[in-house]
Image (cartoon, rainbow, N blue to C red; front, side):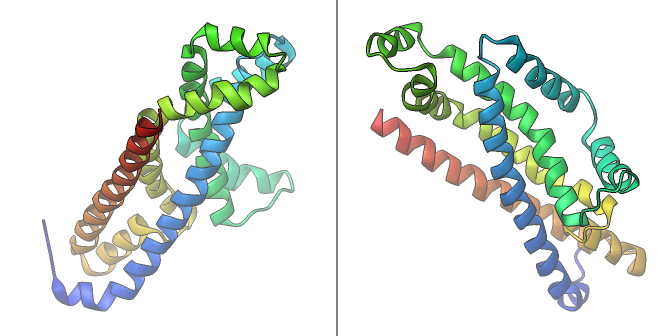
Length: 217
């Protein structure tokens, strides 16, 4: 691993700014992906084809095409249709839509894994399907989905590096700027360490939340 402390001192403000952008994209896109996945996962369990068909189409499209292609489509394609967004908004939207499809499958699986007896018990209490999902099924599904969601969020952190290709100066792009100007790998070495640290912090917080849920069970 290559370190040049002079380069680190000179570029540290840029690295910190890029780290802030990376963390901001992760937090916003990750939260949107979870919310979108939870909604799509719940809708995919509906008995109405008019609801499940568009949900499955969305999941299929975004799970089976590369995120980079989706980002390029949003970044270059939408302006051609008269829809203009900033690179930051485009990046968040692209990651959220892509990861939301994977989250949807995670939540769908956990919703369907809830014991049928819970559905029947809620029905005996005259709860509607929406009330049953909201108050009985989803709390269990979300709790059980935490490990899988954590793994998907670690992918979101790595996905942020692709935003360097749509003019967002996050960690990977600033590392590449250092290399192209100085032909030194220090920037990439710092980025590698920071990506690892972000994953460690995120997984530690998720593990803490998982343990809290387990205690309350």
